[in-house]
Image (cartoon, rainbow, N blue to C red; front, side, top):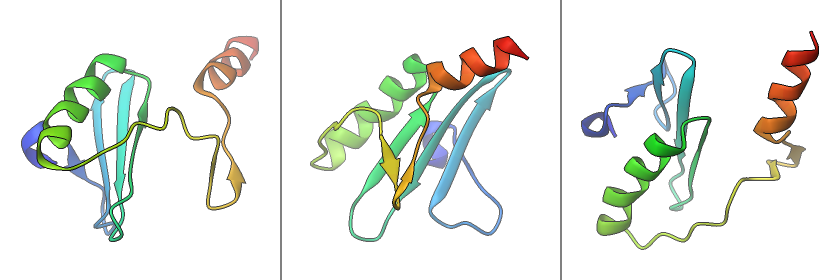
Length: 85
């Protein structure tokens, strides 16, 4: 992941992030092969998926709706809330 420009989050060996200005992409990698890629920079997300797809058998399931039983807000919903503040 570091070769793709991501940094390892402190003390979290499975959590990588890429940030440029207000754009961020987060990659979470699990031992059982689950990879979650999310963020607000579609170009970087696509740029990240390509080399991973060449090396691993991956399947794009779209944006996550929930994670570990926690409902995740859609990024557009978060941006809408921020614009109201």
